[in-house]
Length: 496
Image (tube, rainbow, N blue to C red; front, top):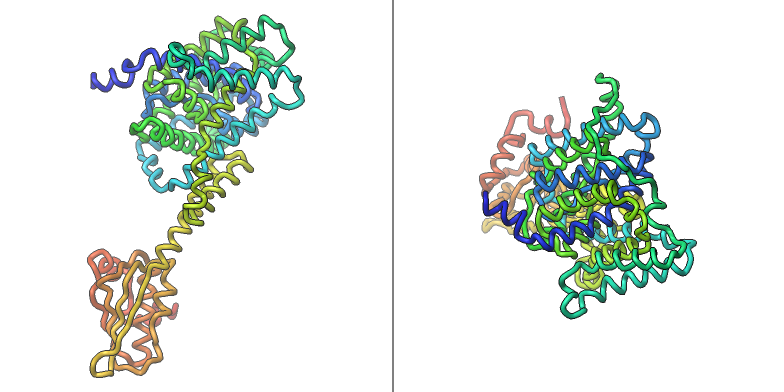
């Protein structure tokens, strides 16, 4: 226990502290932007980012991962806020937290094992594209100063680590933000800054219970939104945890993360914040800046609040170009460039799943839809592939009056028709043996195919013997098969 606490909190104090500051600076304009998307005051997103980051630092299952207000969640809130107002959003946030805690106790995070690597790669690439696209408004219809500042920021971010002595001591994104802010203040150039995004809060958050009627009508209003927020929030958090696992070569407790996200969202809702989840962009910034432990997430949340409340005059002068440069770095670092090279090596089905996930996610701006389509495609391709791994050979018996069929492979809904097509029901033989010792029956469709084969042979006057069923197959066949029961033909053919 003590060893785990030391590892999670105090094994990388300097790296976690500095990276947390970088993340806090990058969180400010995003939290404001996501508040604007959702149609609420900027302080709702800023308070949410503070609350969620601080709480998840203690309750989350993935050290070093950053959670806060996100664009994916904000998009789901627009209609609720427009039709019912902020109080109902806070109530929906509380309900989202409860549902996420329930999901954690139900171990729904274990379903992540059904998400293939090609879907994860597509998810990562889509997020990288969306992160880059989100920066385009800051680079459209602007003066040359913005492009110059952004380019200078990228030079600092990628060049600073190569400087001797100091290159490895400070995170280059933090250096980028400090240097470009100083240049902006000294030069007085006319470009957008954080202060132009919206008014920063000047007070600490206070406890707020949503002023909504506690009745079924309120529940039916907020439940659909809470369910969507729960699904998207957990999905993005689980995918981000998987990515951070890969970046750090360390495991995470995803069911604990589900519960942690729920507790964090309840805390956010009670302090006037909106629902949030893990942020892949900020998590990558944290990892790339040297953050590894829970301390980095805590520092990010605390520093964010301190800066927007007590250092608002300074924070408001950070040029957006500096933060755009940091987010472009995140986009480049997030994108799986090897996936482009692997297009030539990977199977066509894998490439289709990855590219479809990217296309659907980018076109809909909805991570849940993109991942759902990717998982569905991957499942269909897998079922088709396994369904084709079925061989049925046959040979006549020595006396020439019978035939032996040997089935090798998996029999289920995708291979049932191939199973049926392999038998010659018109052949004039007295007996047939169907050897299933090297086959496995998975579902009702497979059992029904066996029933039809046996009954068709018997209808032609052929004696049928089924042998070799393994224990698992025998269990499902004994339970659901009808070929050895009275009135089997009527049952199978839908008779009465």
